[in-house]
Length: 241
Image (cartoon, rainbow, N blue to C red; front, side):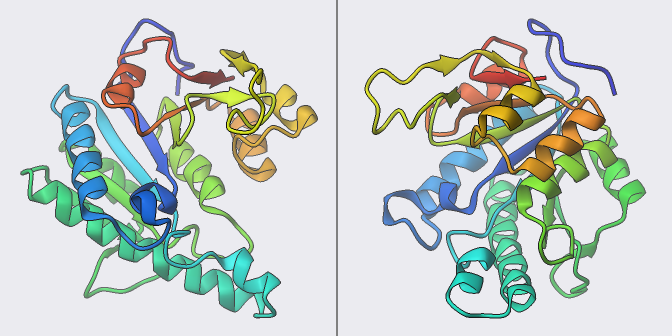
């Protein structure tokens, strides 16, 4: 797994999407228009020959940590959150296959009628056959976020980069929606992210990427063409390395 070189296209990427990205303006559920737009963006990348793994969150349906703060048992709440991610995975699979993009959903929690079980070698084989692989149900364990799942799956499949697609065009030193003069970073080290407490990914995910030298690029999911530009190695968003 080699470090990224800006200016050169990647061969294999891991795309991390929050569940909220699928909700659109409603803030909850799945917006079919947003889903269709996202599927077209993924297809555009796929057609260039880049191999794509995707990890989806489930916050648009149920967020485990929120359930826990409301009095639920944390492990039970996290398992519910994992099931929510599978719903999103199946929705994205359907949207992609409507565009004739062959897709496989692999779940960390076995549910044979809905998805394949997660098997690393099988996932890699799917990628080699130019199928998009969507990883559901997190790591299969409570207390771990889908950010950590993205870092873990990215390393397991030999991804060259984790692309964290968000609602902003990179990492800022303050919330750009609240602070007019917030500064956007083009480059950050893993340690800078941890020391500054920047909200890129959770600390477990950042530490995993740092220990295994897996770069992260944070970019804007809402700007058409951004994902393709990132995959082509163009200087878009914020690179954490």
